[in-house]
Amino acid sequence: MAASVALLVIAAGWGPGLHSIGEWLAVLREGEGPWGLIAAQNSLRENNEALAVVLARTLGDLDPKLTRNAVSLGRLPLGTVWAIWLAVLAAMSAVWIACAWRARRAAPERAWLGMFGLTAPLMLAATHIAWPHYFLWLLPTALFLAGRPRVLLAAAILGQAGMMIPVLRGLGCHTAIALVLFALVARDLLARDPDGR
Image 1 (spheres, rainbow, N blue to C red):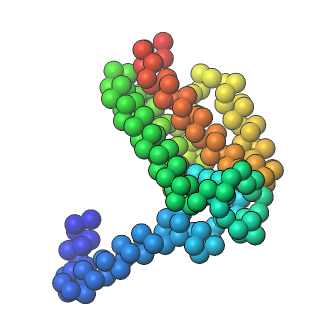
Image 2 (cartoon, rainbow, N blue to C red; image 1 turned 30 degrees about the horizontal axis):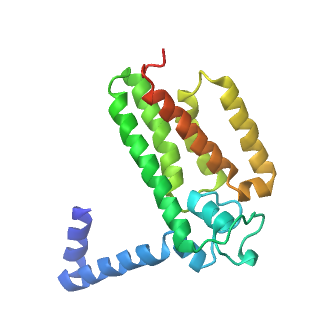
């Protein structure tokens, strides 16, 4: 980041370089989060299963014409929806940190796979755009849970149903699967025996 700022300042000059950085930060803050998608009425269709957008479609006070195949369960102000999203991210991050601490006592192969298995769902929950094919990032999570074939079969069946039934995508079927798999990996890593024996 420092190198990028230095190159920008060298190429554009101190004043214009810093002004450009300020403009870019303003664009990121105002338009690139889920709030920007909603303000621009962009990417709210059911294929965007990002947690923030799913929460906004399902719980937020949105114009029903902006979303199709969504099930509105509430009319919360969007500020409240963003607070819920950030609280979920904070909780997931705290669990990730606790698991990283606990994974030090596991076999390195299991620990690394478990941490990758937690990082993927956390990344998917943090982003504001997550198309269904993004959930292929759950492969390390599935590999970590290979000893639970029924769970993986259920996730595969639900994931396929989510692809076939638009309302399930609108409700965030793949996001829900990712959150459940995150919880299962975290539970395994936080167990007394982190090697899973």
